[in-house]
Amino acid sequence: MSWRDLRCGEPRPEQVGERLTLAGWVATRRDHGGLVFVDLRDHTGVCQLVINPEHAPEAHTVAHELRNEFVVQAEGELVARAPEAVNPNLPTGAVELQVDRLEILSRSTPLPFQLDEEHVDETLRLRYRWLDLRREQMQRNLRLSHTVVQSIRRTMDERGFIDVWTPSMTRGTPEGARDFLAPVRLQPGKFFALAQSPQLFKQLCMVGGIDRYYQIATCWRDEDLRADRQFEFRQLDLEMAFVEREDVLDVMEACVVGAFEAAGVEPPQRPFPHLTYAEAMLRYGSDKPDLRFGLEIQDATEVTRGSEFGVFKNAPCVRYVVVPRTFSRSEQARLEEVAKEWGAKGLANLTQISKFLSERELEAFGVEEGWTALFVADEEPVVARVLGLLRLHLAHELDLIDTALDVFHWVTDFPLFEHSEEYGGWTFMHHPFTASVAGEEERIEADPEHVLGQHYDLIWNGWELGSGSIRIHDAEMQQAVFRVMGISEDDQRAKFGFLLDALGMGAPPHGGFAMGIDRFVARMAGEPDLRQVIAFPKVASGDDPLTGAPTPVPETVLAELGIRSIVEVEAEAGQAQAPDRR
Ligand code: ASP
Image 1 (cartoon, rainbow, N blue to C red):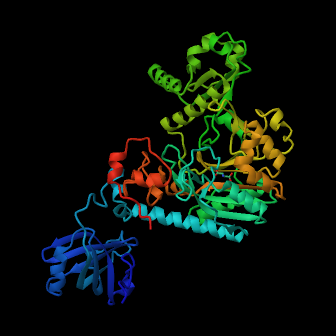
Image 2 (image 1 turned 180 degrees about the vertical axis):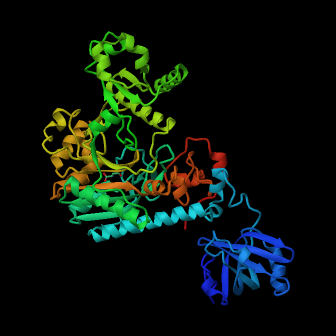
Image 3 (image 1 turned 60 degrees about the horizontal axis):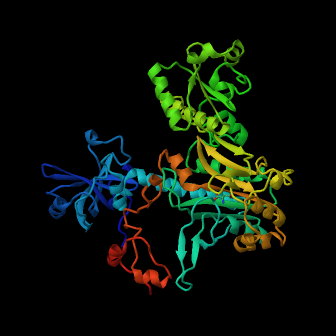
């Protein structure tokens, strides 16, 4: 027996006169003086059921029991609606099912929220996610996610990539986050780290002669959760041997364009424009600039050297943005306050400081009537960061972003290292396996501050979609990078001995990329938050409101793993269910 002949959104006038069985959820029930109307829903849409007490007295009795979200099966003849009852907004709006048999397949308790209710508290939606998933928005988003993943797999397959599964339980993978740990009962006191990415395994695939690897990989990173971050997320992870940077970018662009096409959306123009990291920081104050609007940052360091204006005079860096409007004193004060919160000492408005500036300076700034130049003077990184944030802030405030635009671009040539306050030394900008730009190998140890890496990021409207690089394929060079990062010879062997061994046994030149799938889908769906495109996400505190995880575990379970908790959770732990250890 089949539960249904058609899905709820499928009946059309061509089937009028046919007997049909439909099954789905009760979206609404309306009583109209004897006649009962039910909107029966599934993910394809709704179909109207009519239950007439005279034609179908038994079904009519059942219809009176129906409540929202009951699951029912209805059988009857599909009929044309009276002309005045046709709903032109619904694909099924010209027909209805004249029900003569109605069966309740499953009942629903009263609902914690209605499916068409707006502004439902998110924790409540996640606690009852199965209800939330029935909503059109979630159905659309998860189906879009599927379409994108299928399209990516097609592109990968067409280009000769093979899907290789790599372990989640591994050693710590240095991607810049904390590891989630998994204790091992058979070896108490020891832990696996959950892979922050398959980085080293995919490189080992290259050494292993798999010259085109990909995976829709789950990655785990213990970081603070944000709108664009979850503890676990999926990425398109790929690696290629015997390639240059342009080969990797070409594949990624094909994936992006393919996904747009599969989703029926106008794809972005290829090739995507390039911006070097240095340019991005100089002109936009960000390594992931949103290029849908101008407000480019201008440099005034040279012109203001030795300025009469004290703030500019000795500043190592002076830059400004020109905004197409003027600001009142109070608006200016508010902007300055915001800039100070971002770390600036002040925010100078050209109109207010022009009396201190020379002709030469004023000429160089050349600001049109009715426009405003806003200056920050400080160390270069502070200036870049503050003006970058100000640029974004003003674009939103003044509505300067053309939201109809989709701008994809690459940022390339990042520095290989950055200075880490935390370690008081050099650390990697991308990860420690990124190769330097060709010809800069000698400078890795001699001049780490200025050596550039073959690292590239993909940006979409100011969102970083993913990162990649051409990798080091030489054990000597890999060790040089480890030395710059202050990793002792012993530690290198202990943590990365397997990689160094592999690089010493015939490693081809290789490079790759990883793109956050959920980020990509969220953008495509126009959702500001990853949680709207993930079936069962965690909330910002890191909790899963649905299952109640994470939970404490009983002392006995910890003891078996060689762990003693120093957190006061014993009382709760006593009540927690011991995991099934069969
Ligand atoms: N492993 C990197 C990441 O997960 C991507 C890459 O370099 O391929 O961000």
